[in-house]
Image 1 (cartoon, rainbow, N blue to C red):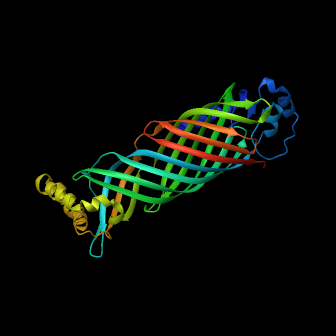
Image 2: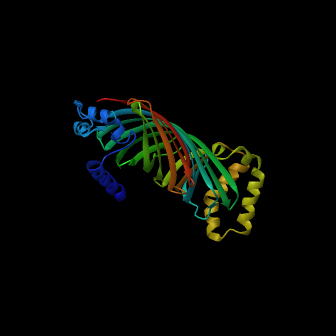
Image 3: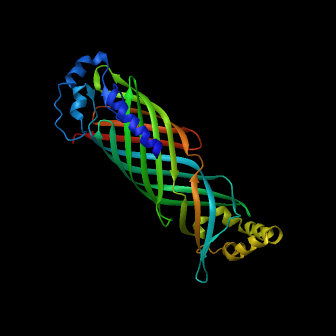
Length: 346
């Protein structure tokens, strides 16, 4: 968080002292071959509230974007997750077992795949500082692989709602621009008791190519990095039928046998105490094909790799319409974003 604050301060300093060149993120100064257009900007009377200092930007020949916007986004993402501090509980007509730590359970590779559709209203407060909100809906598919004391896969699919706020600073020096984007989102999956707080930092470095005969139209390309982290504690409830995929039910006799082989031949006395309390009741419900049993769960969950590389491109048709795409291609996290942005004066 401190690093982000320092970066924003640096960007504000850069924007106030350098010739700015950018995509929608920042004010754009037209090159010398558009000198006539640049000179015309200096004559503009900017009579709108936002961005603050908009008149000063035009007076220096900067072509700033329209201050207010509404962006529609579709995003797909796949990333590894790490699970620790597992707790399990059981609820049936006859049992009510609270969450119990099961610290000897071991996990293999776990994977989360999600998509979301959201809208993002935003406003340039200053020519170099943008604030925005995020409101959307999506779906999440989490694959959890247990490797000890039995090999078992759990696949949970659930809808989720998203709401959040963000802040972006942008500026440039000469032909390149840089932006730093930081947001908090609260993601509420249907099966969790509380929303998961996710924070994302994106840093991008790019260049904008203007079209000779259309100064309001341009093409921007960029590369950078994205860092994502989430609040670690997760708690919820799920029916056993929804927690296990069909193949687990088909091989439930094998899973049950493997469990009792571990219990009788390998489990330590402390492990047996925990198993008797919470694991054996779950295995007994699996053996009886009782999918209605409610499994309570708690865990610490975090993304496997916080940073990944990104590349992107944006086509600005005019000062009102922009089409943008971005992909995460380097690192454990893979992502794809496509968005349409409409901007207007305010």
